Image (cartoon, rainbow, N blue to C red; front, side, top):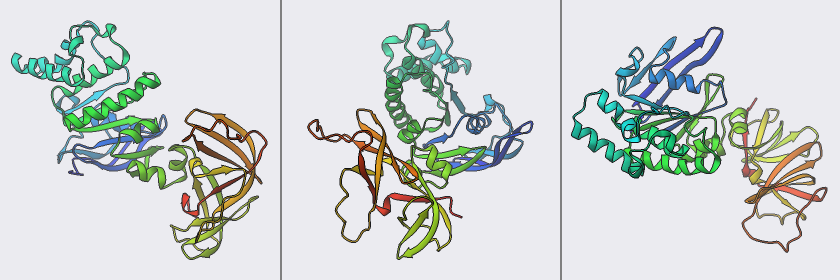
Length: 367
């Protein structure tokens, strides 16, 4: 993979007093499925629009395959966009919508027919070719929009919240289809979303954007398991934060004193010293909830704390618990890997134990 295929080089964009994109530099590889992930207003769509030529950066440059495209108009960039609202021509059939760009470029008739038919086959809508957009479902419209954007073989496909208008089940189905389409065409996909699940499911790498800057750029697993900042840890999934001071070091581990809570043992991956402050992130699925404390593991001091169940939400695949442990509220997830209706369920106000392995916490926001 050529990691310098697409380059944002110290790009900044302001709208009046608002700095939407603040000195962003990143590279995207050829053929990569790359996501810009962040909350509304964080600058991710502005980055996309600058790449598409719809906005011009106030400073910095954008390069595509070694060519400076910063000042090129949109029609001179081989970069196409798929929008959330599909933007299909309502008076054209599916076939004609897909053929539009090729006709505009005055491609030979035989080439147009070959490419459009190939796209219809790829999106599995050959039998819908002569229908109009208002006769299609939301998922079908999105597939047509993707085919129309891909038919003249752009270098980069930009996808701006493309699944936001679809219902949950259709979004889940389209995630699989998008991944398959990317594998088939092999071009670079730049995907903008605020939905962490979409980004985690599809991406080779993710840039987490906040207030115009990139907080972390990594593969999905690294971003989830080893968040670089407190913002990343909280935005990507749920987590528990334990904020305190290092009070002792024990080889590769340390003890953190949290106000109103017993000491927590954690893997000292940041090699912190006594007296330093740290936020420890522990994901709810790492925390076990049981009526009795666990048996001690050989060579490991598991964190075990008595707690009281304050709230429970059953969600089929798992149950989520909110527990009061001393001065802190802790959330935990219990997956339902086995069908045990005869097992006595943990319920509200039960006295239980929460516990996790020291390796299952991750340090962020070191001071």
